[in-house]
Image (tube, rainbow, N blue to C red):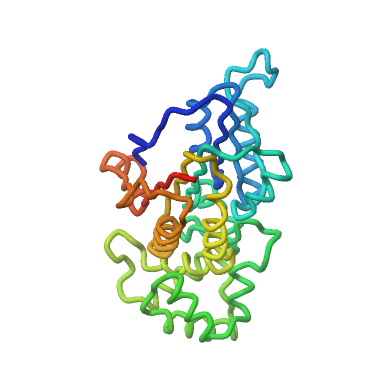
Length: 294
């Protein structure tokens, strides 16, 4: 995303919070801009993401001796951004000057065959960010009522063939349940006319819907957006990057209606052609920014 115009002059000892650590790209961007007295906090529900970035930063960042440090202080935490108020109290984290949420999947998650986030990569149909929480998509598909499944695919995937897909899944599980990403993608392709709609594979909406359902993503986002303004200093910024209309609608209305926030982006910031060419998955990204005013 183009960050131009979003920076502001700040004092020392700032706190920046990356609420969706992922592969660490945004956190690394922050680290390059922060001073030794500043604090960067990275949070993610995916413990493997926290472990990977911890290893990366341990290798790339200099020693933590305060007398030698040339980069900011860094703290990485396995948790949900929804729980940020409790995390700040538990870990003695000051109010933030910037909180970022990037609601997209990381490249590492998409490549993980153990969880099946990508039907192109395939693998076990899990779809959970944290495999210790809740039930997997595979388990959900094995027992969910057909109507409830159709509602999930329609509401969270905005898929107009949701009833047809749900019926096919329930019919198939009588003899051969769907347990892999490849099996689900193949089933959806058989149910939805035309495998590709524009630049989007027809299975994308169903995978999105199941992922949202098993991770309770919209509930996490709704609760977090209501709480995060109180985690900011006056003048602090809240930045949220969403990738589909359900997320963006929640963010847009929440920041407009919050008396503590001033909207800085009347329209969402969109990726430019160069960014889309370098990272095609960014084409659907929308960034909204608000400032704590009181």
